[in-house]
Image (cartoon, rainbow, N blue to C red):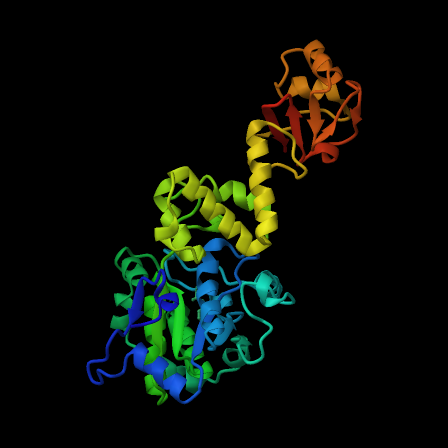
Length: 410
Ligand code: TYR
């Protein structure tokens, strides 16, 4: 009975029913909200530990946005304080604590990527409609918490409960140190829920423990506990491991349309349905056609979400041209890289072609250049003796020979 936009892609909703009060389901809370004309408060916290937001993160923001569009209040928590401790979830060792400056500048780039300063059509979150978004930095209340309050917080959990959390448990049994401050992380995240009076907390499936901690603490502070709405962790472009910057299998929100499209068009068939469900509003039943067509439809829609349909269609065209070997008006990506670190600069164009093994001999290289089939970032090179002064002059550019050979110089 829950709306389909709400349940789309959801892997866990808890509690589904409260034994003590069976009427207390998310359904009833939504109904009550409507009746009293009091929107629900949907919490999503993000620790600004890096600079880029990727599609994996965007699943949660899309869900948050769906709640905004349905008239609820998105409560975005920038975990500038929690980021400094680092969420121990999924980690096998204690995390390095970040400096407050790093965290502050990361937070700014996050807000920009979420669409701060843009109209709501083109941004991930609705920053525009009054009353639909509250943004908090959790250092506001966590930084100056007094010891007494911290002791209160600590008194609500037990060591056994902490060790039952999978990552702590396995570290404890394998003798990998757990620093005491790491136990504070779930409690601080839970305390955030108390401060913002959240009704629903969104998170990845790995956040169940932390979200449940929020429920306990809200109860302790005399509030109605939040619901947890958990969404899957997105597999990365390899289709196997989770999307993560450290695994180099991400698509970042700030990538250009061509780069985004070309990466997405190539994800393994096995994950296309998940991408469609979690990152678009396309109905899977409407997605007919060959696996290749389905993949393209997914890639174009996700690219369009970030860049608009025009840019996405153009990216699709450019990507196709790239494969056919035509030149594009945009710098191609996903071309094999070749190192130019061994080359002595200044160097001449014909020598470059030979040095990176595209041409077997200097004379062949000269011939190719004179014949007009060599381009650097789309621009024809016509003089074999053209000189490049330093590696910086050509580094990052794409060298093309004929219709099929592309190399990115690095
Ligand atoms: N622990 C969350 C994560 O790593 C981030 C978070 C931080 C969530 C503070 C909520 C919160 O209140 O994804």
